[in-house]
Image 1: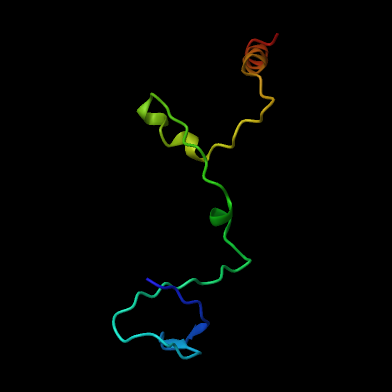
Image 2 (image 1 turned 135 degrees about the vertical axis):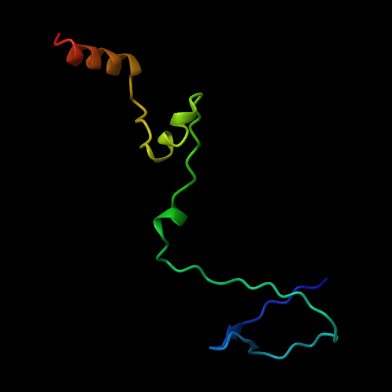
Length: 90
């Protein structure tokens, strides 16, 4: 199989128009179309995929999907202590 790189356009009716002649034997060909990506991407395309957070409780399965990620300096023990102080007015 031989590869050719050439410029082509798609007209208003969706037809592929090749701008330059090809010197290849007649027969079936495979066409791979590479379309330039616009610089204005939607946020879902530009964001890397989030790792899925698992839960053993069925009711919580979808809860963590939209939760913001925890910061790297998050201390779970400190957060528990703060919640206990607030709950019991310590």
